[in-house]
Image 1 (spheres, rainbow, N blue to C red):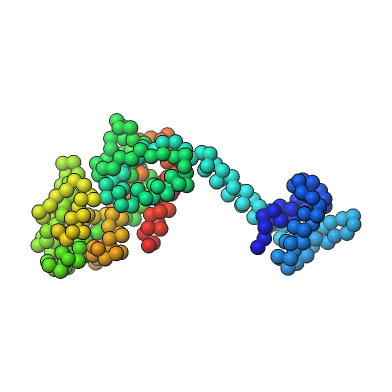
Image 2: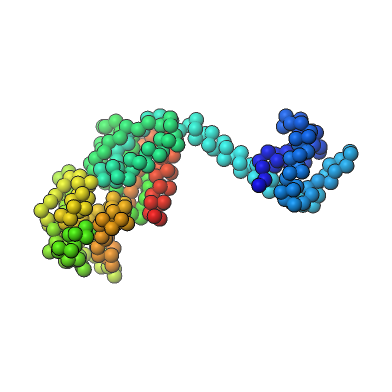
Length: 300
């Protein structure tokens, strides 16, 4: 394997015209510099220099390789500098509002990982399905499903292609049967979510270019997404959840996705703040981190 230091010595010897000059430039002994060049030539299985007692010049292979060596050194230095900027620039306290179900079951361990990567960042977390009043409450950013109603907020996409899914536990489906069309949901116990004064009891689906909205009802209504998910897992009814909230349950077979032939409502995930001035390096890095984690999460 080619060593970074050997590349540096090769480039320095080329630029300065001698091994001894390269050694002085890099604070090495001439013997170390000479050994590095021999090691590099052995690794590449070619001669890079034509040597004489008075001169040092590149061979044809050496000239071709020089461009790649310079590019490799530049790329490695850029990566080193980027990591250094991360370590010195990503710091401070972030006050973050996250949704109940996604927050507890998905985001919390991810935020732990983020802090391990950036130990100078600390979090103040607020877990609630209500969107925090970003203008009045001491919250820097919020992670929320759906496009915000307030057009004054800065909304940065984190996972744009997420959708809702209809799902139920195998035990519930064994007792009550599997709905084949959205209209069949009228005969099922549907677990509804209420946010503020809004009851989400009308579920919308699309198929073949047409849309249908089904009013549903059931014996349980909750204002906490995690509560609705737990009811579904316990076999109490059918839930209409963000796919990310239940993705681990679907993969484990604890919940079964229903009506897969129908397109359900989009539920994109955004990072929200009141002004772009609040998009500090820590916030921007957190967004990039979450985007990457959701891509990996989706891929399974």
